Length: 334
Image (cartoon, rainbow, N blue to C red; front, side, top):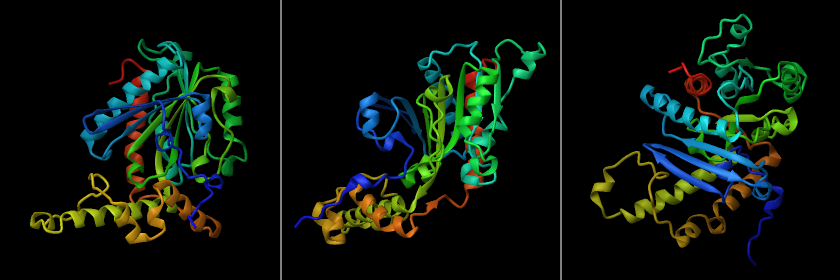
């Protein structure tokens, strides 16, 4: 009898469309930064539980190095400007930037930290001091429902109705379904966002359908769940086994330490996977992750995990995001 898993009752925790989409994908590389552009129609979006729209994702090796962060900031700004064209806003269009999340919790502080570094100009416009090359910009960090008792989308809807910006940019922390993308990915989309969806705390969506103006949602995965960590570890074990088997008689390889098997192309045989993990070895990656989710979730052990240096990394990420937003919104910002 074959081993079958009912996958319909599982929802892998990820906010990243790149980890779910199978169609409409275009990728290119700029140095060591990978840019993936995905366009989903209504049908494709429903299949992966995402709204139709354009999703641009940057993947990079490190954001804490100054030169790397400056390069990523430039690429991010250029790609963000493409989304401005997609939603048809021009240089005169006014913008409200919203930092979602809780500034008291490191992995959820990306939004508030970004707002603190965003160049706001509406007060200068009101007093007739706004220089040429700068557009009208408001910024706010509305907090989380646990602090305010109010749905964030309702707060934003009220603000938008009052100040009437032409479009909105939101910045939020996301959840990834893979260890390798934590703190090393930026997703931006014109489809809006469901705050908290990746950690199972879904709130009302913030999108053009809900608040009445175009929304560009920018997100950075800062957490990953335990099921994904275990699944990735099993995959690393396959690669470790296959790599050592292939290089067993190669003395030069035995001197190498710290090889990143995730990045190497290794031929993994199905028989090797079955020898290591039996029935589990016969499952594909998604089935393995779903099985682990089935085991951990009911007993409350599918924890959300973040790196120990997250407070430092999030500060660097917010520098890149705020710098890229400022550069895209204002002509006179370098």
